[in-house]
Each structure stands twice: as structure tokens, then as C-alpha cells.
Image (tube, rainbow, N blue to C red; front, side, top):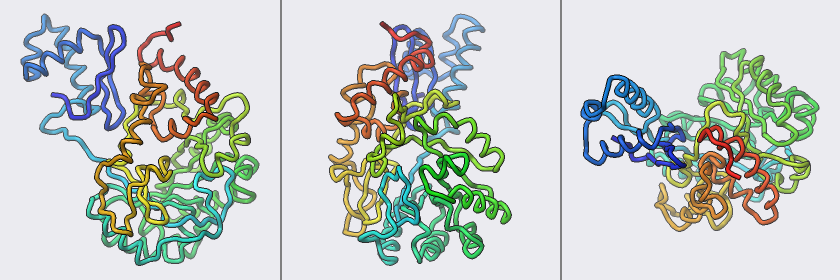
Length: 403
């Protein structure tokens, strides 16, 4: 009955069936969990399980539970199969025309090295063998590459999956917009503000107005697959409602990203959130409370501008490097000791979290837990924990935090 991704969480007389592939879950009583577990153990069909119940009311309730479990992928039928979400983040350059205060990769106008066109082609050829569902071109600013449209043309002709582009939006103009929308399924633009004043604080003067012009140009061309993102920190958290309103007016999809204290963001921690408390994960604002479903290093990889392979954009220290795609590493990389180190920061494994009944939900991204695990961020970690626990105990288990 159960899919391969089911995890059962326990707290008092309640149980949660969690799909670790998508983070979706359902809470039931221990009694219901025991009935389902018995049916699983004895290999009963669902109809046999229903026949064994006492009355129609119980059967109606169990049918509703089963439908929900089907819906979120907890059980497999002949119609429901696990869907892989293979994804590649491909950092085609570290160069950028902006100098954002919080840039996690410390992008600059000029860098020491980036892959040649031939090396990019070679890397993409190796990636195609893995059949990823999505390839996202990132940077730096991808449009800084003079050959970016040759790369996109190659991708479009040789790759059948979804192509996305992460950009600051300032280099899209009348000269390149037609080629861009021909090749790219989705454009992700970073804004980090709701007006000139708030945006320029992070990204520089004039960026806000230029992004608005870019969005208008894309819309004039009939292109609407645009996300607009803003970081979540102490300063920006106060304007989330206004940011959602702005997206509604612009016809774009809002995305609130966690502030990550890495790169220049690590240096600017005081600017971006040091007053009192900065929550890196806006859990309480999420409509759907998803649990940790990270597949970094299994279904998701980052390839940086030098060809080094990492589990994701957060685990980019040398200890997490899984090889180099242009220096002979066979892709996809087999699970190795680097991934074992990543697993240490999954909330169910992490030394400060593994006993907590809401750990899967407090840190849905192990990479963010890793970034806040340094000893010098101990106060942040403690504040995040205390802040989240009060809300999550009630939301997840319908219980108050134990004293």
C-alpha cells in the first residue's frame, strides 16, 4: 500500500504519515495508524480493510483518509506512481553587472575563470544522459555571457525538459527578448523590494524601475511565466503583504526566499537581519505546511561556474564537492561520503534537532539549517527554534509546546 517515500512520525497518541518526496502529510490517530499498519503487514487489499471495519461510518472515514493518502502520494495504485523531480542548477557564470549586498556567491563584474562554450556543451551532454526534468541556468547573471543565446539554442534543440533562467532582469531588452522567450520556459527575476527605496538598499539605484520595464516588455511579447522574488529577513518581512500585492498588480508569481548568511550575505548579517531576530524560514506564512523533502545530491545537483558538482546551492564548501563534470567525473554522481555529510544536516539527523517532534517542519531545507549551524550563529539558531516551536506544535500536532 505505502509508497517507498513514507515516513511515520509519532507523538503521544497521534501519528503523521509523511511523504518525504514532496513534503506533504496527513495526521491520524494511533488507532487508525495501527489499522493501516496491520493491513500493510497482512497484505490486505483496501477493500478487505474496509470489510473488516465495524460500521459504515468507519468505512466512510477510512475512505476519506485513503483518498487523501492517494492525493499526496503516500500510497501507490496502478494509476499513481512516484514522480522524480530531477533538477540541475547550472551556474554558467559568476560575473554580474550588479553588486547586491546579500549575494550568496559574491558575484562580481569580472571573475578569474568560467567555463568555455565548448566546456559548457560537454557538461550539458553529460547532464542529458541523466534525463533531468529541469535545467535552471543561474549565475552571477547568465546574460553577462556573450554566448548565452548559443547555449540556450543548443539546450532548446537537444533537451526536451524544462528550461528556466535566474536573472536580475536588468539586461533584458528589445534586442534579446524575442530570443529569450523562444528558448526559456520560465524567467525568475530577483527584486528584493517593493519600491525604489527598498530595492536599492540591496540591489542598487535604478534596478527597481528597470525590472518593471523588463516585466512590461515581456508582457508586451505575450510572455507571463515570470516569478518575482524577495528575500525574507527582519527588514523585508514587514513588507511581504505589499510584495504579494505588487506581484498581483504586475501579473507575476511571488516567491519569498530565505535569507542565506553566505557569501556577501554573511558579511552583511547586521544589515539584513541582526536586530533582535531574523527567521530564515517564513514557516508561519506558508499556506501549505510542508515537511523536509530534500533530495539534494540524489535528484538535485548544482554545477558551479568551474564545473564542480555539489548537492545544492547551499552545500558548496569543499567538503561537499562531489567531483568536476569537465574533469572526468561521470554524471550522475554516485552517492558517496560527501552526501553522508549532507545527511548530517537533515533535521531528523542533526544533533540539535533529532529528538524534536516538529523537526521535519521547522527546517524543511537542510541547507538552511547548515548555514545557521555555525557556533557564531548559536543565538540565531536558538531564537529560530523557540519562535518556530510555539507555532509548529499547534499546527502539526494540535498541542501546546510542553513545558
